[in-house]
Image (cartoon, rainbow, N blue to C red):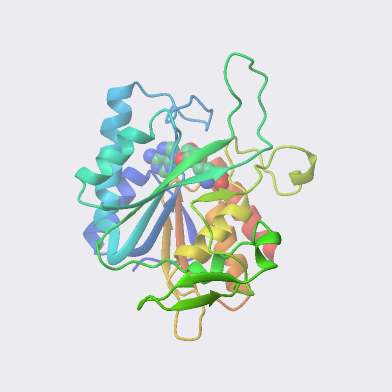
Length: 272
Ligand SMILES: C[S@@+](CC[C@H](N)C(=O)[O-])C[C@H]1O[C@@H](n2cnc3c(N)ncnc32)[C@H](O)[C@@H]1O
């Protein structure tokens, strides 16, 4: 029996096979795997030649496809260099394209003058079904960009051609596919930062959980979420913080390096 809400110190390539054999499935697989940018995670998982990178990712994406519930979704972070390859693999794995989202930030760190500075990382959203999936649009509304537009009535045509007046939603505008959240660079985020070289900000991951986690009839998040490349444990922390507000998310994270599992468990302990 799989125990939820904990970190597994395992090789996810093997662990996912065990989960498939055991018939486990998830509402959401939200993961940030090695981008192949030669980051030092304590292993060589980010330093593959392209054929190995593709072989490994194909096998992982195919396993993830089997681990999704019928209405489940896969959210997969990547980098512009290789995201096209991964998108092709997802189509070939029989998943359905929903959107290429962009994580955009203005506070990245760069010294190179040979190219534009990095300001985004794409993340792909594919669903298991072409008809049904979870996207809680109202949970992730954003402030309207311009108050100017709200000063005068805005008219639009209704279904039968009648003139209707548009009124702004008090909770803000529908979010677009560019998700603006700062990276953890700089002294402002020192408290949140661990030693992990590619730790994702809790602000971004929490927003994604709110958008993509199924809810119960009382509006509480209650889905099952898996992060097979859990690193310093951001996914688990964000789920647990929501659970402390009364939600009932069941999550698991798996990570090959014991060092990062220790970091993740320390972060969880610090929540009390
Ligand atoms: C990009 S990092 C994830 C960072 C994470 N999102 C965070 O906020 O800390 C990818 C992680 O995948 C881990 N990893 C690489 N190969 C793995 C494998 N076969 N099984 C499990 N984890 C693996 C690496 O050690 C690294 O910590």
